[in-house]
Length: 235
Image 1 (tube, rainbow, N blue to C red):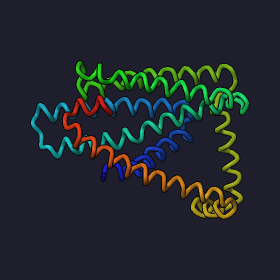
Image 2 (cartoon, one colour):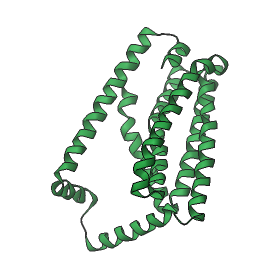
Image 3 (cartoon, rainbow, N blue to C red):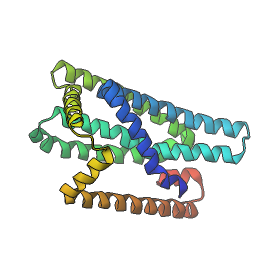
């Protein structure tokens, strides 16, 4: 429950780090660096857990590594796919997006279903730690393809970095005219558009209930399926 409860604050830290990369280096570099960071963490986590096993480290050390891994796992997927969807939205017109977004989302769901169904067949050969490490291969492919996509967008004149620079100049101009802080701007926006404040409350309540449901599911599943590999395959 503690690890799940810390998921949202941890995600905010990662997103803050991403926003710094985005405005300093542009979207292409931000995606590359955040993906490489994810690969490193994904490789380090099972390696450190295996080291704890062989070196007979105290159980608390392994628990701490697992807790940090859980926090990162719950956060990095949002960090990466948000950038991918943002790129797709930047290079498509609204009409193209209305036609391609549903197709992309549907295809992604099919791929997720297929890959997750393969887990029970892979686990006996790799173990849980090996399966965690294999994630780095798909992340590496994602990194290479994402970089190639940005290169194509630069070649064909639809680079999202250009849009970002225009937005940044617009924000700086508005900031120069207004001394209101970020919190004050948010409050003013909620007052001006009440629908946003209602949606904000809906998101907070949904995230809270989703966390509670996730904790309940994991605890119940652990009681019903005590063996780690069988539980991972079922999940």
